[in-house]
Amino acid sequence: MYPLTIALISALVPAGEEAAALSPHPGMLALIFVEIMISFGIFFGIAWAASRVSFSQLMMKWRKGWLPWVLGFGYSLAMRLIVGVIVYAVLTITVVVMLASQGGTFTTESVQEIFRELVEKFRPRVEHVVDTRAIVDSPLYLFLNVTLVSFVMAGFR
Image (cartoon, rainbow, N blue to C red; front, side, top):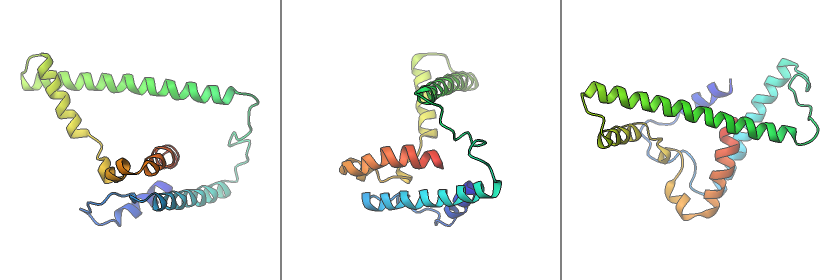
């Protein structure tokens, strides 16, 4: 229900609005973070209470020592490597198919041109989420975006 609720709330935003979704002021950004974490906590709490799951079923028991940290780091690194290899393979296949469909030759320039097209077409529109000017102007805003928004809030969403 949490992703559906976020999608419904997002649908209420008027189309074509050019302002960034997150406030350019560090204080307001922190307030948005607190609101999102509270709403996630409410949804998670309701789901947990309705499921009647125990802490052991949620695997909340801490294994002694550093093993969870080492495993978490290892899994994170392995996942990134696997995703990177898959993305590289998909990009390579895409470039080959695009060049073959255009009847082009496999030169460095043609491959670079295809990559430029793909990068521009699929570039994340960061300016729709955060105020890029505020990131440049305010070190606190940059810190909040890098830590709270990127790692914590995005992880829960």
